[in-house]
Image (cartoon, rainbow, N blue to C red; front, side, top):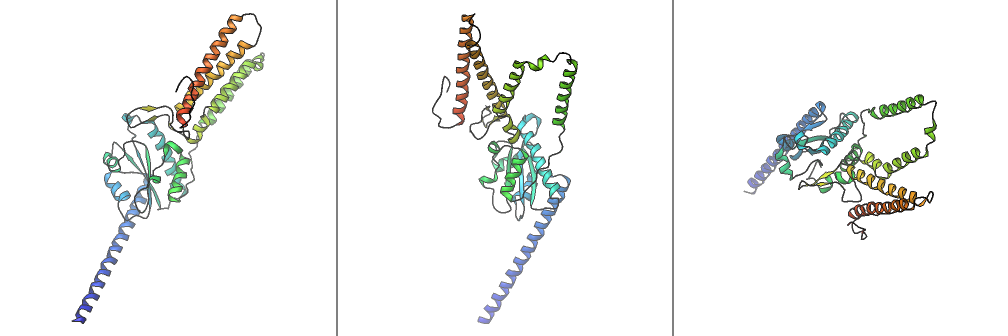
Amino acid sequence: MKTVHLIFGVCLLLTSSECQRKKDVIGASSLAEKVEQLMDLTARKPIIKLNGAKFKEYVRSSPRNYSVIVMFTALSPQRQCVICKQTYEEYTIVANSYKYSMPSSNKLFFGMVDFDDAQDIFQLMRLNTAPVVMHFPPKGKPKKSDTMDIQRVGFGADAMAKWIGEQTEVQIRVLRPPNYSGTIALLTLFGLVAALLYLRRNNLEFLYNKNMWAFISVVFVLVMISGQMWNHIRGPPFLHRNQNGGIAYVHHSSQGQFVFETYIIFAIYAGIAFSLVIMTEAASGDKGDGKKKRIYAVVGLVMFAVFFSLLLSIFRSKAGGYPYSFLFK
């Protein structure tokens, strides 16, 4: 009787091992087919457009030994999502850079889900805003760090490539297509300046105009200190539309800003500078018209107080806990 049990146990063990081996072979075959299909899709276009079936097959289901970066967006014109289009352009640059620098790699793939084509996926992922860039790791579910913080780091291709490297350990060198618009604009400017100098070659006294050079210098300084260079480096959104449909023109954190916010800061700084110029004019020069000087002084002082209060109010809204305000909260 014991011999029968022993033989039965050995047969059961062998059968179980054989079933597990067949399951592993089927799983490996399924994974190889899945990777091959993804490689074929990527060869046609670096960003795979995902519908419900493809998202479940390639992104959500197991087995997987690769990472997938998915951008959830809304590119339809009626959605009027300007930042979606801008982010998608940068996302395309990153995907193309990865394709051309590592064409045979099968460790990372790029996908895109458009809201109007796959609303069920947005519901599945519980997303009610766009754009969102997420990393789906080879094993397990995405964590909080697997969602790119666009508000903090921006949506530029370089920032996106750095974030992908942190999540997947795949370093992508961003290769931007050549852009000659800056060169053309610079050559056009030089051409206009050269033409102006040639036409006025007999009268170049305007080059010694102190007010003109002072105005150019002030405008240049205002452009720099208002955050335009930060916009160029980080590529922040123009403004932000919240979940309730409201529009935020000023970023709530001191670690970020919107493009429209820099225009506001530029205007405020310009108002402060103009008010200082008016008060300086009131305090200098001849003493002929005292009434006019007093008007200049009062107007300049009021302008300075108003614009400085606005600047302080914006700073107070971005720096949590800052206690001081003046005229405006």
